[in-house]
Figure (tube, rainbow, N blue to C red):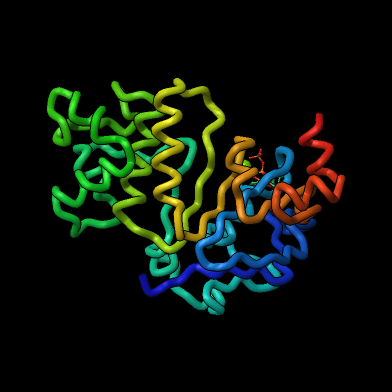
Length: 241
Ligand code: DUT
Ligand code: MG
């Protein structure tokens, strides 16, 4: 892809309201292909960081750069064409599984869709459905499980082959086997791709190239798991609580 996926936040501040600040003075940079885990208590600003990166909101102050280019100077549609989202509540629409996976890469052939579904560990459950890839899904994804919905959204992201991945890890309980399939598929998806993960699993956090510990809209600490443990700060206290 034309975008390599280096990301820099420079003194980024933003508020959802006219007054006050939601996040203030955010400074960090992410090398191309790295995984960043965003951690911190509820309301800390994790979702806000990815909202700003994807321009669902624009920063009030400071700059966000991708490969050195200010994202506010890029059209939202073109920015998002380089991103894929795997969210807790996967977005499905009424249409076949083929169509749902192809969303974001409309030119993909059936063979390419199936290849992506295989890499996402989704092919085996899809084949068991009465109409296979031609099964029509409802918007709510009736008849398929939460975990299967996630596998579909991973297949969609693999097919889209984005430079930037935004992942909001599930907190809901998913059976162990599906969970293992999801983790394996996510490893394939994230490999070599700049990934922002709103992380809830210790395993994901430990493996991240960089952990940003957010608190009250600021970065309290940043570093790898090992570095943050040595610091004996907030992360250390979270880990040992
Ligand atoms: N906030 C708003 N309006 C919104 C969304 C959030 O005022 O539309 C506030 C709530 C919170 C702050 O912004 O005080 C940061 O919210 P964010 O959603 O970024 O927090 P989080 O770290 O993602 O929390 P959670 O773990 O609950 O998802
Ligand atoms: Mg959030």
